[in-house]
Amino acid sequence: SVLKWDKALRFLAVGAPGVGKSTIGNIVLRGKFNAPFKTSKGCDACTLEPQSLSENGVTFTDVPGFPAVDPSLEGTIYSMVTNEAEGPVDAILFIFKNDPHDLPSLRRAAPLMKELQKARGKKILVINEHTNYGEDFEEDSVRNELQGKSAEIKNVMGLTFDLEIFIPRKAMMHREMESLSSL
Image 1: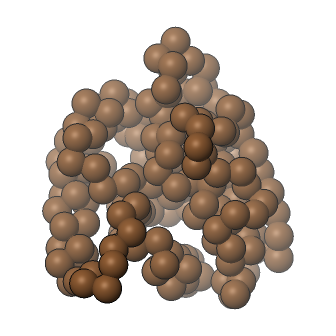
Image 2: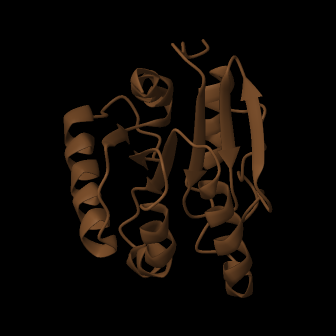
């Protein structure tokens, strides 16, 4: 089902390639995983330039992942993302996946993320757990793990957030993203 919005909102989604920016945009705009943004499932990075789509008074801007798959593109992507953040935006979604091996990636992305902290709008941390758990899924255990990841991100990158959203499994993404409707 489509998320309900009390007012017009503009979202900007930032994060590394493959963390779920496009998928979250699809949930925000249409309540579905696979439309209207093309997701990076099966490719390294599908979003090559900023894409803004609007539905029901909500605008969602999906930008290329940073740090870039191709390091030679990082300057270009940095400029694209900071230009988008200078426009009207109600919230920037800083999207990360729960990956214990992404410390070098966090450090490479830190300068851009710190720059985005200066932009207008709420700063929202979203940690997206990509693991598909079976029947033995323990939500509290996974949420604790995601809270630990949040602390690591804030520590390594020196960031602060107005709201934190933890998505402990893909099937719960819609429910967790509903907290955005209170903006």
